[in-house]
Length: 173
Image (cartoon, rainbow, N blue to C red; front, side, top):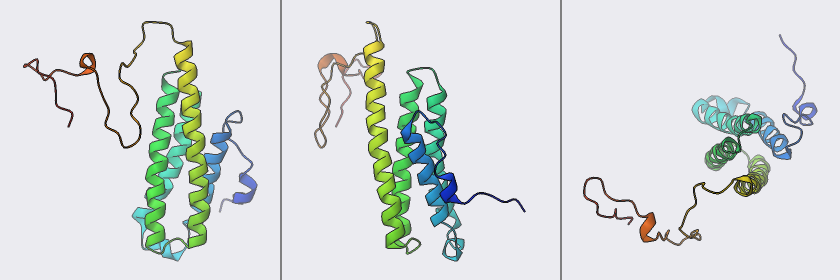
């Protein structure tokens, strides 16, 4: 049998030391694996695997993205990490509602996931802002104003796509 270090010892490990968010993703993965052990989970292997894969995907996307030198690929990796984190957050809610996680375990994992989401959103914004500032003229620029939550996206005439073969604008709603 192979011996492994206890999770509390491993929590100090940060796969990408210059990114605090990678350490938080690693910690969330460790804690999730720790909380998804036991007999109750033996009856729900699909949900356990989905939750574990989700939090693992978050850490992997951050790690892979940080290794890319391209300013274009890192924001995409952060988007993928956010998507995986949001999937995992739903799995946490479902496992709590099914009684697979105690209220305390759920609260711990959800708090860590919420903190990680805030960090990822902030990092994504920072990376995109710095990539936009570094980009020289001639890159893609949207003419549409950013939509606020709950408001429909408003496009100007030059941004509307034409329906194939007809030349008529596509309906957005």
